Image (tube, rainbow, N blue to C red; front, side, top):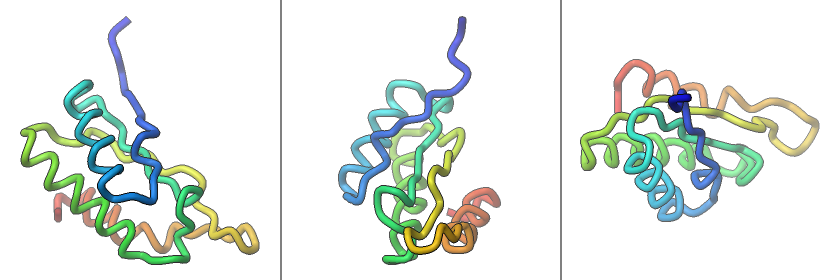
Length: 103
């Protein structure tokens, strides 16, 4: 059966260079069928909201560099690690801007 979507866990990392390497490998292997995995479990969102901004900017830069658009962003484990409070409010502004084509 044809591939519907490939969601990579190589982008679940606190390292921006590691994120970019996993992102570009996924784009080169699967094209627009790539689902970029973002996880607050790897680096809790309470640490720094710019963590997410850097990743969305990297998705835009890598997409332009390779000529392949990211097909999907898959968010996993959005808890802040304290009282099981979700932290979608931290990532939402960046996700909303990406959805609107703002990066």
